[in-house]
Image 1 (tube, rainbow, N blue to C red):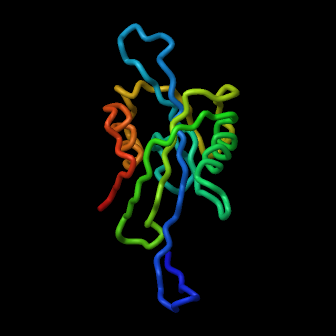
Image 2 (cartoon, rainbow, N blue to C red):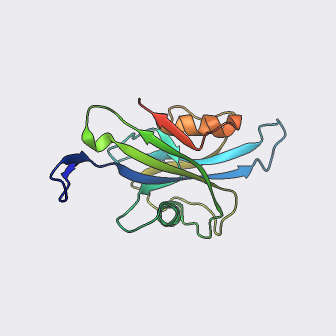
Image 3 (tube, rainbow, N blue to C red):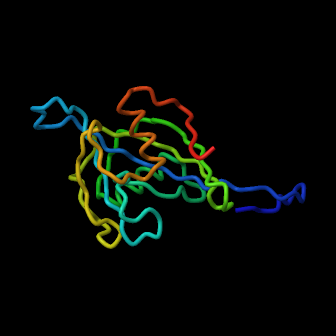
Length: 165
């Protein structure tokens, strides 16, 4: 998306910010050494990456809202949990090249503690909600989220990442 800068009159592109929360836990029945699990949702009826697995909670940062506040709000709205102990994972700048709306900055957080039992709050947009080992993720995953999950699994996720460049 582009806007005209009122101070200079120049046209500038605008990035769309979003926050993502990967809820993580140690596998309670870890008999095969799979270790850390992540909670993912199966998207449906959203118009974006439907039938793909994605972060349990994610969404746009609203005007006047911090990335952390958006993460907390989305976790409540999408999986019904509060009191997240958020840990910043990475900021990802991404592009799809063809549409100005696809200039994005994504803030990824993890949380290993929260209040409440994660559940599907928006059944029209979420077909399933499941825990998966980081070492055995489902297919298909939203591509840019797959990059972050791979970095979390390997333990080498940089503070700033890029996708689509």
